[in-house]
Image 1 (cartoon, rainbow, N blue to C red):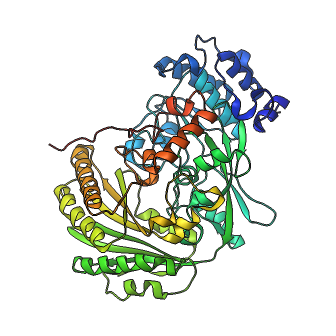
Image 2: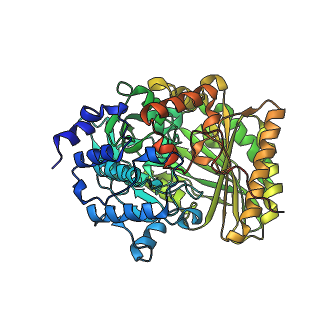
Image 3: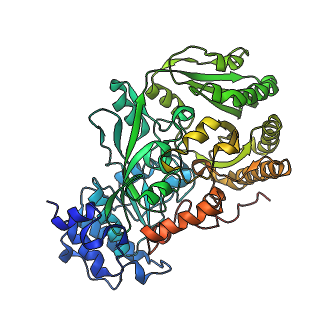
Length: 543
């Protein structure tokens, strides 16, 4: 049974005074844990004094050992402590990339409620144990949602999905995968703005921005969250929306894992049936033609907001192929906006009317688990010359690693239309620093997969070289837009400063207001933090 004090914490009221709560001593943290219903008399004695005792977070391994024992005592069915167990192996194997799979936490905690998330977070502070939060685990680089020798809080049990009375809002637990959300909503003939690959988690995609098949109509996923339920560093569980904690609401729309643990997303729904969707694969001799067609689509994309195109140039079986992924937001077959693509002869054509879950399962097939992965990104003003430079540079540079095991490099280009940029401004706008005045933008995603760690340095050098050459070309021609899409960025890129100096400063201010002791900067070290530096300062050279 939840105590009255715990109820006050959930409401962000009472003893901890909501966002003003600063738990600076072990006694205060224990009081919050007791309010959550834990018997703090069972806690071992500790010399730690809460996070305030660890200004540099010099957590010793034994701190995490003790924490894991404590969690196993309080939550025996939700804590995995044996690194040799099959449960542990299955869990680490659930990550998308080899890099994250190889990152070994000291233990795994799988809370089933926001209060249990609060308790896990408070205990991590009490024992100064570094932690990471995993929703779906679909980021590429180590430490994104994993932590070496620390506590991994896995949100997979937060998988409830409910609809409000008029079905206008879906409340979605942060541990859901997008295909589960779409399958739940499909019988109601509605959907939400969310991910395009079936097994991506709701949490990471949405807090990083979240591109959707429907983004020209509704904006990105973060622009369609009407309320976040979050756990603050104080352990308080609060609602965050345009009228309650509006500054935090703004920051969560693209600000990543820097402010709180989001346990539930309340998303606006929209009517949705089947889509006309699939892939068109073209031979190498069509590459220049496809550059023209994709550019012309980008110029005209806003004329048909139901359209979405992901244009790829990829190396496979000794050839550089171009691939157009086309999605139309209803069952119209071959709409005019796509006919330039469909009029070109193809090696393969998979276009058909499909349900949204079916479309996301198809995308999963081209994003398999278990390989080494690296994503890099940049943004430019849309021009044909910029696309041509990217394609030529990609083919030249990526050819250096064609003998690498399991090597599948791809240049992925998407349009951020003025329709998308307009939708980003609703409900006070998001934190990304983009506006309709930027005009139509070209979003670069370098997506490389390979099989052997021995090839890491060469492939990372290629990725860094393509990116730096593209940015230099963009700057020289007045085309570079200093915005990095978090969900496509590498560990060698500083995302949050790219939102603009004013937005970056505002994000830092929001962080200090809601997390005055900087728990999410110091104890949760992974992914993109509120610093001028990327997670890794320099990428390795192949030489």
